[in-house]
Length: 134
Ligand code: FES
Image (tube, rainbow, N blue to C red; front, side, top):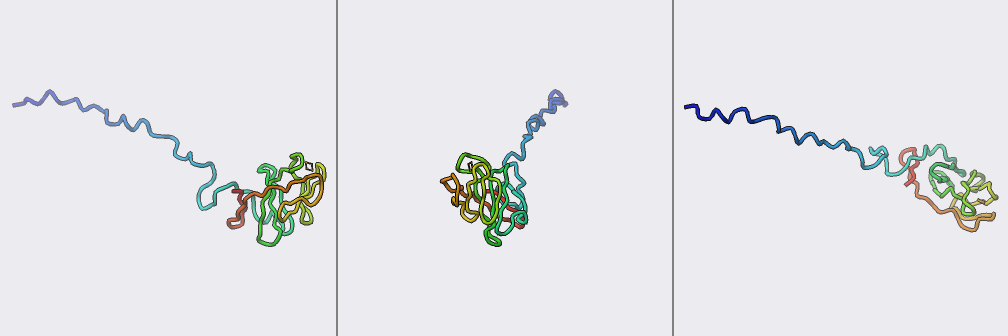
C-alpha cells in the first residue's frame, strides 16, 4: 500500500522566512566607548590641567581647573557676562578676554570685571588619568 505518496514535496523552504528581519542595529544605546570608562565625554588627560591652573575645552564649553593637586573642578566656559568663551586660566583665575571678567578657578565666583554671576559648575570626574565631563 503506497497511499501516502501525495504528501511529499510540500515541505518547501519557508522555515527561513523569519530570519530575514534580523535587526541591523545592535549598538544604538550610546555613542561613547562603553567598556570600563565612566559615562560622559572624555575631555583629556589630567596632565593637561596644571595644579593651580586649568584648561579650557571650547568644544565642550567647559573649563577644568585643579586648584589643589588631585582636585579637579569643572565650570561652564561660557562667560556669564555676554557669553564669550573664557580665554585663559592664570594665577588661580579664569579670565574672559572679551571684557576682562575674572572668575575664581576654585569655585567659579566673580573676582572682578563686568560679569556679575559666577560660572556655573560642571560635573567632571577622573578615571585613571583621564577627565570626563558628566
Ligand atoms: S563676555 Fe566675558 S567679560 Fe564680557
